[in-house]
Length: 268
Image (tube, rainbow, N blue to C red; front, side, top):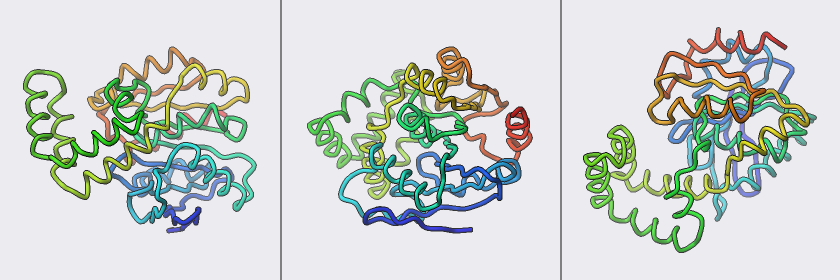
């Protein structure tokens, strides 16, 4: 079922599914929509009522603000959503970019959380160039100017791939977005937002143990976009989390996850 949530001047679209007693807020990866999690209704819908949102600049969400969807704004949005839906606590689900968002929220709102389900989350290992480039207005201006010259960007991606500075599949992924003006603008807006969602595993461990919050981590053992070694790094730093490695790559959100999720959630 489609639904909309009004926040400030914007209208955020979500897919509502399941009939479980616990509300769960879900967020997809870059370039996707909340429909990503529809195949997981069979397992998640038993425990949760799922609100799977389209992030700003994605899907049917109408983001009309003059600023990026920053972490403080996202927290305010969650608070308002909880107030309107009379939620005392919520659970979170995130994949890739959405996993980064949900991870970063744990230290700030742990007292409001029950479960956090993360599928190959981004942000565990911050890229130096990204942190340096997008942290200030000068870097952001430079980055926007660079995006106005897509042919140079595509040539640079090819060159970096050939000399081993980046993986070919990463270069191909970026070239797909750089070649289209609309996609370049989306990329810039989303990156401006994501710079505010910082992941600190020490704070996540402390917050999740204090309240406590159950953390479930699902990861493809052959993930090349966000290396699976980061799953084990996460488990080492946040030992109370439950880690399940999946035989697959990065895009593992499909019906095959249902029995895995059933198994994880059955040990209440």
